[in-house]
Image (tube, rainbow, N blue to C red; front, side, top):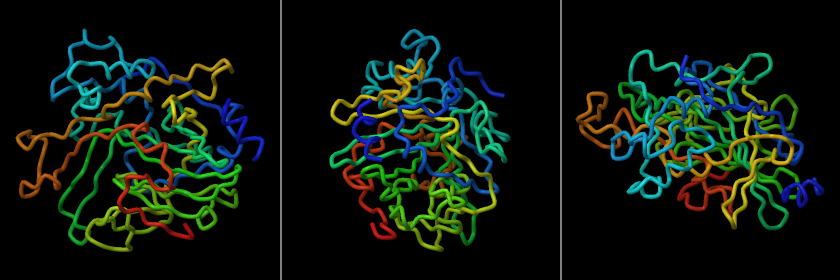
Length: 354
């Protein structure tokens, strides 16, 4: 494969119809796996890493808050045909389509699939669950960006303000997060931690490593799954700026389960000029589905209106609602970025020599 040639030489829910457990394909550049991040989940985390195909199996496509007619899309949506939703008329090429939970996600307890799969405390894998997607992007000057995407079927937005946590704000179905590591000549140089609508960049040398392995540790915030470089309290009132305290805090700790995302993952490379995704196992007898990566819609319910009994907006303020809309997928995360931070990100705190 192109990346291998140019870089490696230098260094209780519905059951999905398809799932492929991943070993690391031989064509993946060795350093992409060697320096992959390790995730430390919060000790109180309820919403664990989630199987991507199981999520699809428990949702139905909606447009303008209306379920699409089954005749307008494949009878059963899978990772292999999800992109066909982009062709639905009047859907803005799929961008206005929401994968909406077929079970009410606001109940207590919530539908089983939203809780995901807890990593095994010994192997750090997620048995029978593919919750991570690793995408490499080759760039000029012997640079390769490796995106380690993680998926959770539910995001608990948290309780605010921190000094009197009475408001639950920002819950949503579907949650894509990522760590990006930039390599030059196969050497890790810097790392980006996604956090809500923004993130932080850190030199690879300055980042904490897991048990002398050389692998960066990403601390995952309780409920929101934002990624941080250390354990503790993180105020994100200002997007991209991590302060030790404030009214809008995330919480990470070093006492929760450890998750190794490369043990159960899909592996792809992305070609910037063509916009094409290619599975690394092509030609190796593998059958990793690719088409789902082209889906341009949202991976969860549309934000509920204020007149929906499930919704509650503090003082009627749109930005202070209990439930928000689902996110876009990996394709929309600026894979072709020039810097370590996304190019369109107004604020991205640079730490440790970036």
